[in-house]
Image 1 (cartoon, each protein chain N blue to C red):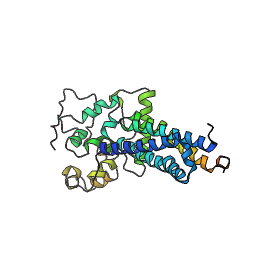
Image 2 (cartoon, rainbow over the protein chains, first blue to last red):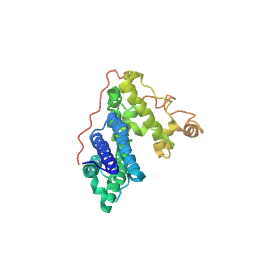
Image 3 (cartoon, rainbow over the protein chains, first blue to last red):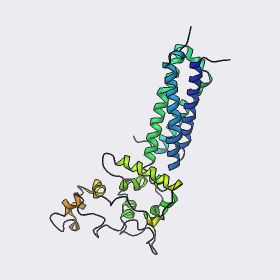
Image 4 (spheres, one colour):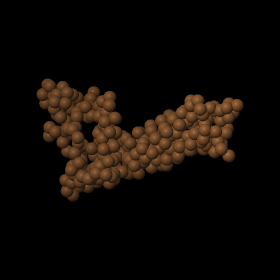
Length: 67
Length: 217
């Protein structure tokens, strides 16, 4: 089944955010500078890109739903 | 009520897990967003809650980065941690640590941060450099680790200023100007043969170490 473009982007957005937050959860288990770096360099960018992709998907005209 | 750090971390992990589940729900069923309620759910799950989770996670990580455990997690700092247990009152860090003059779980940070507007930012920036050196650079010997700049009295006076024991001590009133000179950093607490015995890693000789008794609750 082919998804509309907006849903395709939302799917990727959800996956990126979930991945970033899973990394954040793992880093919270460990008190170590590497955990902080993983949070900063992996978790934050993934969540940030996911949020931006979601926002982009809902403001892009060609991706809006059609009746 | 102040939450125990572990409890706060567990709550945060639980909250993050809920956001992950909501994010995956939208990812697996993006067609939910066709309905009005689904759009609202997506906005909350993919925008508001992740921002909150990352903000809280960052806050927790920054808080942890001020802990003694965090500072001593690099092997090269082990002797500095050990110096806190030296059984000798002439060692300033040991006296502060053992008598709880600094919070033991934030002992390093309490003395080694700059008490200025951007002191924490500078400390974090230096911390990133330390991580780089630890994993990608040449790790110095513990005894060769030096401060970037001479220790500023401001860091001592953050706690000691206004203390009766500090202001009335005869050693601090040898001259009428001495307190002013110390307050303006003209006369260093550390390098004026007064409180100049600090960690002294590598020079302990046959030193003995204090063993804390088990805390009773």
